[in-house]
Image (cartoon, chains in turn red, brown):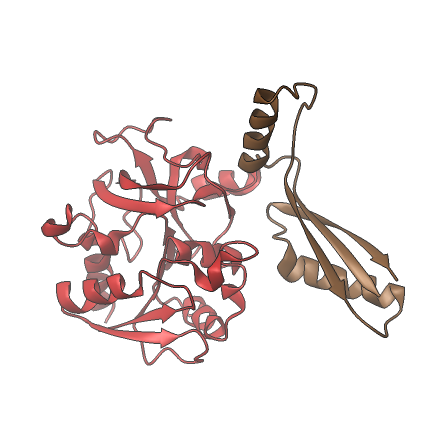
Length: 231
Length: 80
C-alpha cells in the first residue's frame, strides 16, 4: 500500500508522516512535491502539517492552488482516502474539499497533548477505533479555531461529519478541554462521502510509546485496514 | 490604475485578533473604543485597463484568493 505525502514549500511534518507510514506501519511512503501533477499510484494521500507557503494570506490559501491539488481533488472525488493533518486540514478547507474555515486560535498558539474523542467510526481513518474512544494526541497550531456558519454546522452534526472532538481525558466535552475556541469542540471532520478527513491533532506524531503516546497509530492503521477490506 | 481591496471578517464571525487589540486599548485607557475589527488591505496595480475592467478583475481575484467567502467579505476601490 502506498501513501503519497504531499510536500508544499513550508511543510514540516512531511517527514513525521513518512516515518510513521514507512517505519512504524511498514507501508510504502512517497513524497510528492506540490508542483507535481500525479500522485505516484498512491492508495492514500496525506496532506501534512507545517506552514505551506509561509501561511501567507491565510493558512492553506496559496497551497490550494498548487498544481498537485488538481490531482488530489480528482483522487478525493473518486472516493479515495485523503487525510489533512493540521496545515493539511487548513488546505482542505481552503480547497473546499471540506466545509468551513479556520480562524485564529482564541488567544494563543497551542503546542501540547490534547484528548480527541472519536465520534464516528465509519470513515477510513477511524474504522478500527471504538466509538467514543479517547486518543491522546499532540496539537501544535495557532489557527485551529474551526468555524462554520450555523447552517453548515447543523448539517455537519446531522450527517455525523464531526469525527473528532476535544474532550477531557475522561471523554467529556468541556470548554476547558477546547484548546483553540473551535465551534462545538470540533477537532476533525469529514466530507459528505466520508473519504476525506481533516483534523488539527497530529496522529502521525503519536505512533510510538517513546514519543509519549501511540494513540495516533490507530488512525493510520485504520486506513490500511479499510483499504484491505475494500479490495 | 490601482485597485484597493479591503478584506474583513464578516460581522457574524468572531475576530480573536480584534478582540485582543480592543482589550489592549482598554487597558491603555482608550475605553471609548467599543470594538476593533482587524482586516487586510491589498493594492493591485493594473496598467492600461479601464476602471470597470480593473474593478471586475479585482472582484474576481478577491473572491477566488484574497478573501475566503466562508468567513470574509471584501470591498473594492479603484483609483488612478
